[in-house]
Length: 268
Image 1 (tube, rainbow, N blue to C red):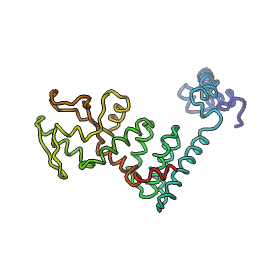
Image 2 (image 1 turned 30 degrees about the vertical axis):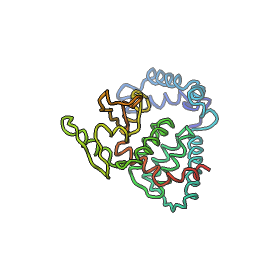
Image 3 (image 1 turned 180 degrees about the vertical axis):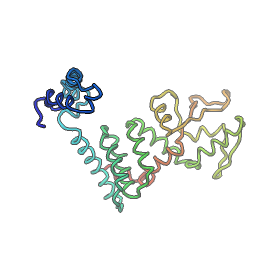
Image 4 (image 1 turned 90 degrees about the vertical axis):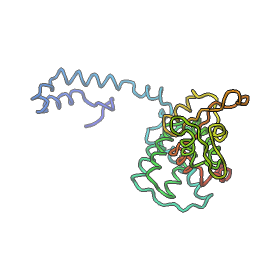
């Protein structure tokens, strides 16, 4: 069937005839002229001026098809990934289709250039040593902005500097204990308790930050409330500390661990 001026519906009459001649539709009394014409007219109304609507809400699509936009985005991220591979001398392997297709599906929709570096790092990680959990990391990256990404890196850097960096959720659970009892935990030469654990966490002063709320909802971070007595608190001491969950830490560790000291070279 050739396309006429309307790219979506070429010939209302022809489609109506097809519906009317359909035995199943006729037998069920849903293939009448009235039904077919009214339905097709409704679809016509939906698609009127659709190009203008796309241009209004998605200006990046005005000059290019969605496929072209996604290909160009993937190309830009791919160049960054190639740069990382060359700088670090990494040996890569083909990503299996089960991983490659979902990764492309997510990263090719990224509209923030500030997020391209993270996507490139994830792409390199998948090509270096593919693991299905990387698809979950891609899902998270697709739901956050550069603002949340910057915050996550800051929390990771803080958490990776302390002796309990990759075991902090276990230590905090032990400190909390049963029925809220106070416990001290000795780990890697340090004693942690309710009074000093806040110093090991990333401090926040506004627990209602939309970034904090989003990252909590995604299961990437969690909060620990300052338990010091009010008379022992220092001025401007944070009321809340945040830390990466086990899943959150594994994601940031995947993206940053191997290249944390190479950022300057990579960004050149």
